[in-house]
Image (cartoon, rainbow, N blue to C red; front, side, top):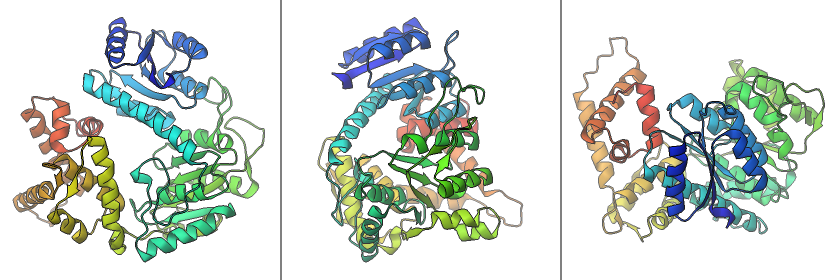
Length: 464
């Protein structure tokens, strides 16, 4: 079957053989290539659901160029980058270009297996979305998207009003600005607007403006011509072009540089653009939705955001209040997240009475995102299927202990970030020592992902 086909691209024979044996043992149909040219030839003849590609291969196409080639020639293929150099910058660039994940050598078997399983699951869920898109969602409390993170709960009066407004706005095609604190669900609501519009059968592309460097963002949005800059070995279409009559969601719009603000304003005014390095004007019919957690009016006063662009974006505005102001949504959301994590764990779980009280009384400064993290952590520490707040009490005790031990002298010149990094470094170092430098077990002990642990180790320059 197509979903089981995997292509391994690595110049090391031993690595190709190892991954082939491992993945075939798990039931996948595996092909291998020793360099970029061979991989592209195989891609011409066959389709793959997952590509595992080594980033650094001597006498081969540059890693980013090869990744670009794969992305240009495939639609739903999940691409995972493998690197022996553990370069955070390298990994971020790969993710920004379209890779779904990365793994550093040496890696463990469980990590590779988990990543491949997630890739296959993504493909299955994407296929399910395409089927469900034929029936637009209309329920006031139901969902948009492929998982519980994309479900909208509207038990509170505020969210009921917001969803009603979103439904009215959806068919208009007008530009919408979504505002509110981080984690309140702005992208989820944007996806809801797209699903309720007449563009639901057209592409949906979310872009995080704050996560992509300016030079790369321009190419991502508008595309580029062959030879327009170093590494541009072929023409690439940007999101404004490939989205067609679909929807672009620009998250963290307040992070745009002045130069990008000017370019975006022109597109909104003229409804056309040119690729980087090009001269041809290309018409666009895309609908734009934008979001920010910043106060754009304050940004305008400071000269950091263009007023004319603000008014172009703010044709219609929806403000999403923090979760602490819509407490009626807390438990229904928690139940949705609990169902998701119970399904992943393959067992039924329920909240203890103490956990329910804990959720009701929590202010959730991190909003819906924090609530989901809390539920996920609770399921990890669940005993006999009961999710309680014991792990959170432990965290609180640790925090209080740290606070008690800190000697706070505000007369000294201090940097809060440096203090927090020092505490973080001590805990990670101690955890690594306790696990014998086993990063998988260290990540579990600290309740973070292995990728997050790798990033923190690099950032904090932790040895071992």
